Length: 288
Image 1 (cartoon, one colour):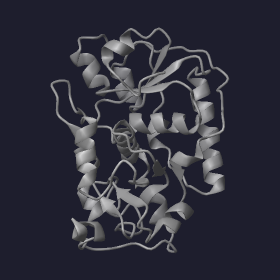
Image 2 (cartoon, one colour; image 1 turned 180 degrees about the vertical axis):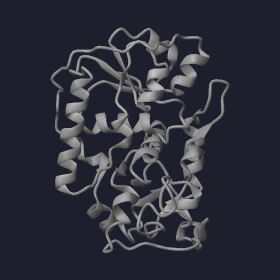
Image 3 (cartoon, one colour; image 1 turned 90 degrees about the horizontal axis):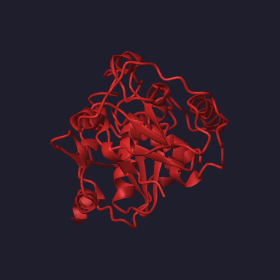
Image 4 (spheres, helix red, strand yellow; image 1 turned 120 degrees about the vertical axis):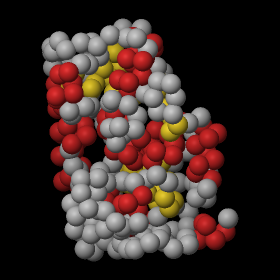
């Protein structure tokens, strides 16, 4: 079984690995892990969670990963610059491949920064890989939450809606990382709990890394979440939520889903309620 988070040394010793660089093309061209393929659309693609949007998401990335040469025999290893500079884009790739049912997928823990800190080589040579037939399986729907799922979860004490966006988005000062007014509305999903995604990581000599499972569980306890709490994550477009998805799964949280449409979708539908302004005291805080 492939580990979710692998070290640079483990990647370097992995004969069947296909490193997938999720950074922008210019960053990839300036230097990347030997043998890596560049798939920046892992980060840039905006999804909706209706049936049409999910079908398009599925088809788009089955084709993209096929073009990268993933047949199911290879281990796909996603990476970004570092774990806190790419908004979780490598983890977004991990989440997409997991949702698509790909059998062997991992994330380079620490990204390219950890790779270079380990003294491992980079190259500017392009990688030529033959396209493959991507093994499109039945997606594990339990990790994908739709807008309707989130509407159904409103007011339910048995489900934790966890907002992991940056603080300016949480308090309604900004609608997105792309500008304050990128989306038509600012605020948060009613009843959501908040832990900024950075809090699940800590600095190391090789760059930011995920905290230990016990530390992650301690962070979750501050908002009343235990390993047995069903959690639905959201951010702006599912990237920071994917970073958090890995953290929570590594910490043993049993039922974690991502609302992949996230605030980009929710804020554009006037039928979806929002909370605006400074957040007040939430029920889990009153009970603490």
